[in-house]
Length: 310
Image (cartoon, rainbow, N blue to C red; front, side):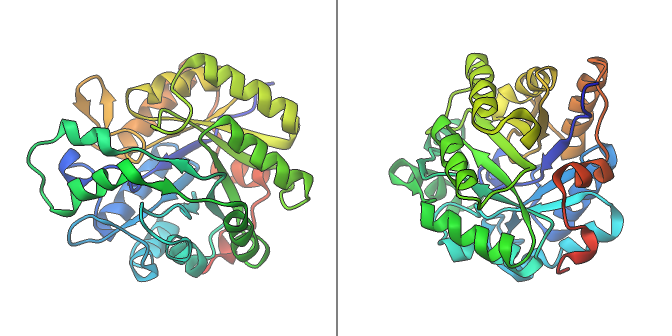
């Protein structure tokens, strides 16, 4: 029998800026409301970043996380997954501040250094709401998103070994799968683990369906299908198409305003829950079922919501 499909929803991220969509959640209250609604719509995992409530700039301040994490925990049984990627230009310790304070069930972990180009988005906006927005995008023209082996080991030790978090291993390119295999071979990563394969970021693997099937093939060769949960994330207009294709191939899916601001061609999504509802409908129309948070916790062997730090 096919496994139920785990839906992850990435609520706000650190890629898009407030000018790009009035629906992008900024304040702690908005982030909490969006997360709760996405969970009610069918998301088992809620992937979270924080933003400065004054101007929407990505922030790593643990105090800001603590303004919305308890509300989400109290209102839903979804799994809370906190970024260790933070925002561009942050140090590793800054990026991880929220997760280290919160000690969540899950955290993201980027599996390699890479170019991470946001600067093409400068061509799509003309009147910026905040001065930081164009500068933030432009700096990625000469920027390396740093995730060395030492960095990855540090996160595994501090969050995994010391605090019991399991990881959403974010793989933006084929080499990132081999990096993960290196840590599996060393015994630092043990199954079952979640691999989030990411398509369409400038600097990573392109949003081509041939890449999707090839990534699945290589991941099965490296890890063996029973040992990992495969999830698919594609940016922008590719979001739903890749999610649907990945679900047919036995994968799980990630949606959310972090990854795409749109619900259909030319139409902004009014909420994260709208995207969750759409992908859920697509999955169910394919005669597949949606995983509950309880099923997801069992499949990923998570420590449980009662052991988090918020």
